[in-house]
Amino acid sequence: MRDVPEWTDQLTDSVTNGSASRKAVLKGVGAALTGRNPVWAAFKGLLSGLSIKAKILLALAVVLVALLAPVLLVVALLALLVAGVIAAVRAATQ
Image (cartoon, rainbow, N blue to C red; front, side, top):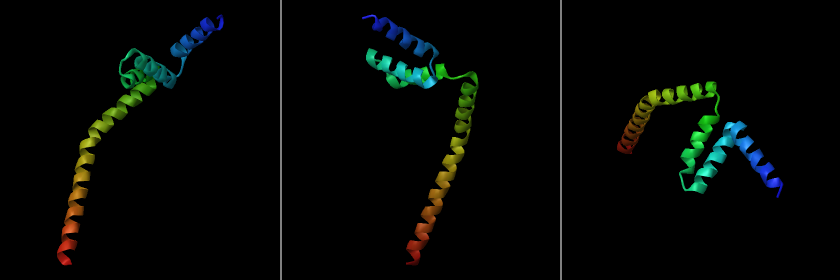
């Protein structure tokens, strides 16, 4: 029985001082055990474990994706349009 308090102390230390991935896993498991959404809790645990530099880089990546998404959508639609025209020309020549 003496091992249980030592184990819980180690678990508490790993949550408070652990890496971002460890925090994410433990927060997700805790949320699943309490009936909350484990994915959202794991995401929040991951964010809380990241350094300031990593948080800034993540925010910049999200902004960059948000800005480039419409451009990528237009390029994809143009590619589909070109593929449709090529298919129509091939069907007409046969």
